Length: 525
Image (cartoon, rainbow, N blue to C red; front, side):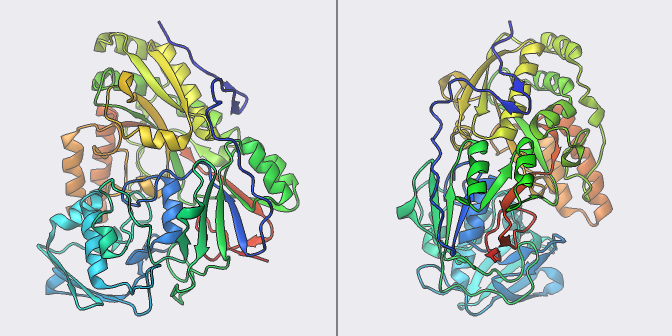
């Protein structure tokens, strides 16, 4: 017997039982030197090593920095570094910190801080673990030199330490790095252009930052995350507004300056406002995904996961989530960022939208009627629409569906719960991968067995190791193709289509960059 489902209504979703969501907190129009921002959801956590989601990435960009930073071509450029040299045929890297950067407590950024930060990151991140595995010795020489002694040449080191998404290799004071990633509270201290203001934090409503007057910016031309980072505003305030229509009205009134994630159905109204601008945000292209919990029935059985995959029609999901404008989405896409080096269409035809076939596969796989606990993100319109389509689809396949409506920040916490679904865990959740989050095997969370859902697919893990060690691009592309075919076989997650999210801001803002919510170099004119 199929369980209850909620269906999309137009492009938006009608919810019941959402009274527990936070009520919108609308700031009064701020001073000219305050930037008012409406994130798509509340900040989940402030530890950059524990929260691999887009909301935390925005927070990281304000507070923390990395040794290298990606430019608009996704090439690493020195950031906290003045430069580096390699020796011993690439087995020794000597990195030199530039003079000037300080942490928010006033202490200079030292090599020992960088070493401790890299070690903490390297224990948690896929790319980081690979870096540490090929490292014989990582040490600080004085205050400004960091030395990697490698077991063998590893040309991807700079790319690893420039990661702009998933678990970002942020540099923090040594005392903080020694706690970061442990689950214990940390001091939120970086060297970035803004300081986090914990005393002004209001869960479910507000996050606040103040310009760091001791910030030492680079002088290079800005390019994505690389180059100069100029803090034009004295303050940045995030106002969490769960209802997108309320956020749009606040934008029109000048109560907020910037809506990070604009639902496409509200874009025409914003475009009619002469004082506002709408633009596509992610220049790589994101992906909406469905993650199935491989620890517990029914989705601990790969055959049952395959039954869901066969029933998926990406176009149905993307139309519900992103509307009728095909410029904003693509279907029949695979595992990797569309149009980028690893992208392939190998095997995408497995997602054939065949519900009848899926029912037969489900019966053959031995489904026993277990409840599927589906986490429904009531405050995130794009994901809510995808979740509604999925709930309906799972019911039609023959699953018993139990919908749990939560705000997205709560989902980001609950998805880490490994308990059975009926004891506080979950069966299905939905999320967005930014373009970089699925750019290659080093970055892709969906194929990561340690990411929420915890699928164990040894062949994928082995191929990722081969990808790291591949001698050239052609070899890496071939390995990425093999990984995609294994995703269709064992279904660690299901890509629901690529999308190009919209953002909206007051016309008086300049410098709003494509690629993510970065607050440096944004100014009011």
